[in-house]
Image (cartoon, rainbow, N blue to C red; front, side):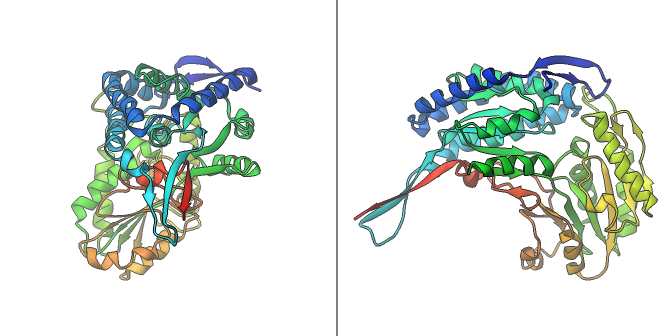
Length: 454
């Protein structure tokens, strides 16, 4: 078993730090601390827990520069986007400060009893297995509602953002949380299954790849433990005949190229009405070619490297194979280390990797469709994933009657798909199951207890 991990700056390939993985005894100590802390944390009322969340929001503001710079160094995100990620974590804290108490209040139910109601009680220690692409936001949207519900959490973060992972624990400590409420679990992927099996762990939440989700869900199922899975996506981006083309093109650039395309909810398959196709391609090409690539620590950089060289190679292979199968390269298509140019392809068929696989980088197929909106729906649904879809149209009333046609967890009209603290987030099909955020998210890791009084 590997004992350590080095973090590497994908911009210049310099080694940043080296971290030791915890051994079996150390892992057991972490879990025992979490379990002990749970016995004290669960008896606090929601208002008392919220006081810690309020302080955490202040710490995020105070440590914004430290957090954002570490994110940029470890996974290449442009510094402006790293700052925005930290700020989004603050918004999530504010949202639950305003709403958590109401969400967790007992709920009266009508039945044949004299009185019946539901209570929402914490499960215990919850394991989070988190990805590198949004190293703070992904953790916060899992951990904050789980902790507010009365659970304690341990987080196995992605190894290539080990510095971000440690900073997360540091800010919880700085905010005054009791020891063991939030702990960073510095372990390798090979150690995860044993942790899931530990009786102290009551449930697990994973955000990551389909392969990782399958492994974690299988391990949890063996011991009848709940799992929430937020997996991959291959979101469609549909531009209808009556769309506001300026808005559709501008939004398309952000929807696909933000974070170098490394987002599960990025728009990854574009379907443009044939009457707008040529104009869309021309405008989209101009905008992506104008993007400034470079050092992600510079404020005017719009796209940095992908998080690792092997990830850039994966995108390169998917694009090259699609071109070999007949796709036409409009722009981009070149790799330099971990950098991959923003890439646009046309003449794409559903058999090509850029259509039928998740492309986790800045490459996008653009496909035309005919007069019927249902043709775009059919193309959109030709995916094993079901996370979200964007539709640009002026005829909102008609599209609202067709929302049920999409096999997706979210439908966004005239806006890119995004996660919002006030809206449940999650998918269907191979995009996973369960929901994060909003009221749904805070109730994923609770015992919904029925009380019946005659």
